Image (cartoon, each protein chain N blue to C red):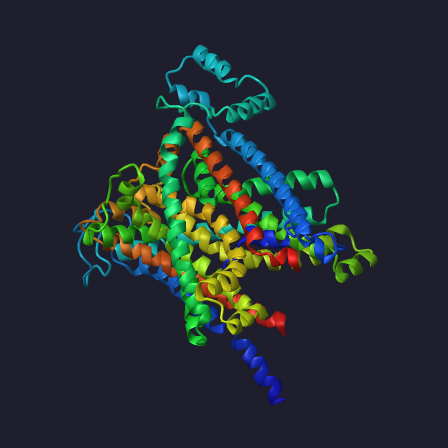
Length: 281
Length: 347
């Protein structure tokens, strides 16, 4: 009894450090994003106050060129940045998983080779360059960023899903479901997609880091939110213009972005360790 | 911690796993290797050609995503109906999509990527003037990255200390989550504004002169390159260290340099080289932003300017060139990776 207990506890511990640290960091960020703009006596977007004031008791992170409180703005941007990244990861995750799975189990060679070539072609472009180019054609803004990310990224998920679906499709339980006479749709959604998506969801987590940085980078290049709205990338960009005068309008939003990235990295690392532990058991 | 789809598919791609014919006597090993190599070469080559073709197709179709009429954007809002029709005819836009693609495809091979809408330049001249700067930055990043990653991976792999390995892994995963463009801004602040080690703007063409301007962007690129490379190299070094031939080398007392290269590095480098060729795509993205931060006259800054002014042919041309560059380097990377690891054919 005790032996079983220690074993299971040991398994629980594997990767827990990363998971707990990562989740606490994310929760802290979200709480900050919910509470700070609400409690703060400063408007995140309206100009006013002393411009470029150094960090002090009144302004913890100082003020920017227009006299706005950097602390309030950094936390006001949390939902824009995290939200865009979450949607920007979810759409390609769903689309890519479904397309990839269908490709993996379909026997139509022509469709397979054409869609497969398109997937390879999209994946050949450097990720950020392709997104930037698509935004050139569809116009700037957060919805465009999400659309461009989806148009580019589904292909990466589809590639992961296709490889996995080929394997899953040959498993005993899928064969069993087929012999039992379940409908194709039921087999697809109840048996194949859940097993394929465990792989694509794991990929989504590491992709989330790339996407949240890409969203900020695109805003940094002026392709994201229109000016008054606080957004980390745009704040870093505005800060760079007055970098010789003040470091705080640039460094603090940058640190927030790093915080988000590192938090997700911790979660991804922890989950990976835990999965490895479960698999090796 | 990141999963790289490209390298994963390299492992899982049936074409990548070239195994020689099974029933060959040991005398024929060289012939077998050569045949396998040739098969691998042609397979990869054909695949690269097909991906390259689709890169062109996608770049061609991309311009159709734009909501407005490209011709009207090019001519401005005061264009008359007649001039629009004339321009359409001149550009061949009144023909079918397939014939348009055919002309586009033929023109690419003649080095003609179209004209910029706003400046009086051909897209080809934009690319040939500005691409070398970008490639220089990427080349310097790769050289710096390799020079840093190999000693780091060797040191960590040979230290028996568990804590060192753990810290190394933790450090690499954290540094991968840091945004490169922010590191670039921090670098600009620290080295450009505070320490005056790097000029904040300006450029001088030609290699020795340009070094002053590109060492900092290249170093920032290494911020993402070195963790990835050293981590992968470290894990393949750990695998190699378990091999018996390494022990044989130690017992035989092979010379240090020969030991490190032939016994440790060469058998371990293949995954790193493949990954490096994949990282070129990532670095192109990073370098584009870096050029706007450090005001370097590279192709990335041209791309951003073209995006801002909706200069579609320039965007299309630059994106296609980058796509082809990535296809080319992943071909080279796969080939080098295969050549470096002889065990692939000998086992």
